[in-house]
Image (cartoon, rainbow, N blue to C red):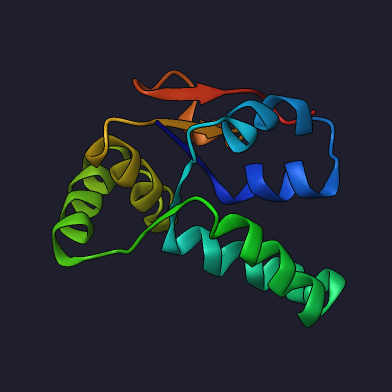
Amino acid sequence: MNVVDSSGWIEYLSGGDNADFFREPIESPEAPLVPSLSLFEVYRHMLRHIGREDALSVVAAMRAGVVVALDDGLALEAAELSVATQLAMADSILLATARAHGAELWTQDADFEGMDGVRYRAKD
């Protein structure tokens, strides 16, 4: 199982330099897990840059994955991770979501470099 962080979705959808890195987990026959936080972050970004209708199309594609809501248990686990790793709130939620489901987190966020269960590629 895979979780792609929000910047990975944006990179893939915009055809950025790391788009091919994120193609594997996004286009895999096994649907990626999509934290509800990622829906928020990607939709907000796309609203700003491509408009509401196109942003809704992007979110529809993301919802083809398995959307994982932030519940109380996941929130507490994310808080524990944040304290232990010094990750920001959003990053902690994404990592906690991946770990709770035995998934790998795919990212280009340097804050995750070297962490267990993370596939990291530096942003070019």
